[in-house]
Length: 264
Image 1 (tube, rainbow, N blue to C red):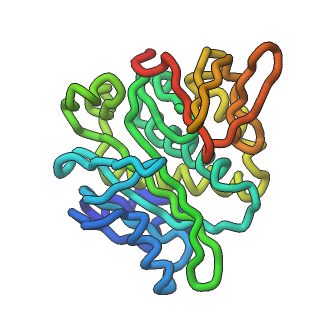
Image 2 (cartoon, rainbow, N blue to C red; image 1 turned 90 degrees about the vertical axis):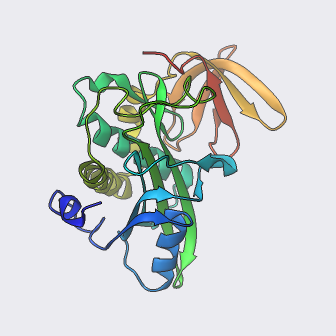
């Protein structure tokens, strides 16, 4: 990747102003950002890799980068000075990444969010986000990891019904310009989040939520609850209506299943 192509498109104050680029990183970009923070790097430090060999997703899942030039894996450090929790921060990040991808699309309405933090295009996953709270140099920091499928032309049979790439969806975006726009959008959204909390972003997030007012299953280790999704609340919990009663569920405890994959 070309550093200049990223930095010349940045309009951030902090995010990406200290930047490391890798063709291949042998571990995860989140881990590398943590190393940099422990060495005294400032908030906003960012690591971007063409390929990461040990990418991680939610619940210990593996994130595969594919071949050179097909995707980006990036992580950025954020100040952790609110008590809203990881769930709300991650939702704010998902909204920012959705903003960035939509800026390259002729049909932005096709781009939505699967709670809590997956970005889908025409009902297929193009991006995942993993946010971690860490303690470095005596203070708490957030590390947000973002992986985006950009140029893959196909996926394995077991993935093709759930995954896609920007190229498959007719969205043209280079690695560098997309990375820069993600950082720009993330700084804007995170600034709002820090000032006003997730409440200020909730309506926009709900407007992008693909399962809103749809029947879904909420799955935890011991049970499955079926009902109608009523969006998310100000804490970032997903709201499930059953028999006229609405209950909130946290992203750290449950996952969502529904008929939204492949939904245009």
